[in-house]
Length: 405
Image 1 (tube, rainbow, N blue to C red):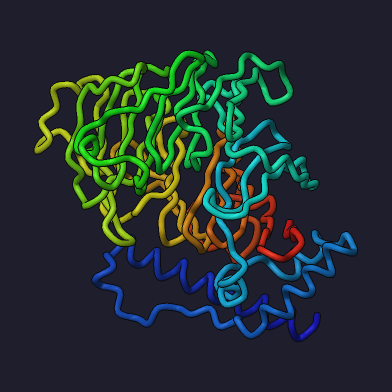
Image 2 (cartoon, rainbow, N blue to C red):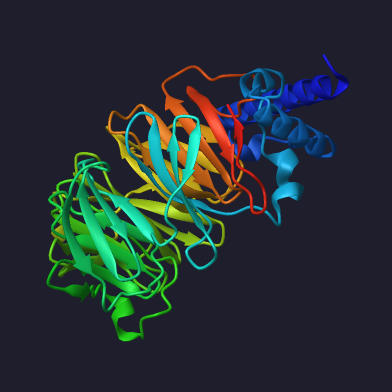
């Protein structure tokens, strides 16, 4: 064992153990009662040498051996990726071994990738967004002037719809309907429902009176049965529309700015998050009675801390990614099931159709593939759940892609 390996392993193990003990104490007795100094990961001075060794392991096809000696971390690399990091976003899972994603923001130079097990393939950068329907079979692939809708990733093209009004818009999210007939397009220029015959700008409350083109924190979700659309932005209410894009009702945000929404797997609940700085509040809405809800009484809070950036519905709970680099599983009542620390603000998330594999991207330029309900991989893991990290992929500006599996 080299001195570098010894220091990296022992210090990382001690840090993770201390953090996990701190969280366990706070969960039992409350954060207000935790009086000790917070643990610190002081391995930053080791990170350049570890990163160089990781790159060498990639070249020599010895990554698995390297990972056993040097479990991955986030904090030590912060100073290294300040100028190189980029958002990993619009993650869509194709099958057990394959996924597509974007590295880089929609407003800057980006690259579209396909991962096939441990191979990474660059896709056509004329693609501006990719989305997958809730039923798991329909894919939508956007270009500046059109959207191609396909039955399965490798399947036939169902139809091609033109982008005229929305041509050249930067796309925040793209969600095709289960039948492939329409696509929800979310953009700073407006939120649109697009079909062969129409590009319909959605109207959804307080934001309707201002000019479009400068939406911020724009977001939206489709119910799994595609009966309802939820949308919002920082200057709107939370809004629920029908599947033709007509407003049904809206709700005032509990915190300052609407930021995220998602339907439960069975569509009986909608959760909506509003944020203020790096914190936020998530409310739940009963979809069986949402047209007659009393905002004062019928919008229970299921979380009062997270500014949610990304999230997925899994069986009878949600996995939510926040501004502080945590992913957290919470049930429909708000009970936290587990938390897992990845380090940087979460920028992308996708769950496999069998609910066994979670892909998570962060603004650090890290892409993580995690197996759920599988004992954690090493003693460097920070979290309370059973998540096994199959790999993390580092995609930094100006660097070759680096695997850490």
